[in-house]
Image: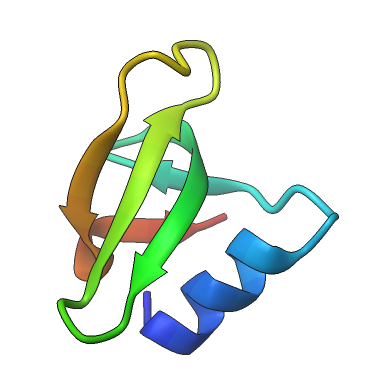
Length: 59
């Protein structure tokens, strides 16, 4: 996923269907400079992690 689209999803009030390794996630923050996103699984908000944008897939 590119940084611009990830940022659009993160700032949108509408929940987009995005996955990381097949797991539905929520995007909290996008770093265009590092090409990463801070995410967490929808069912485990305590499991935040930074991942490369290239590993995120919009369904």
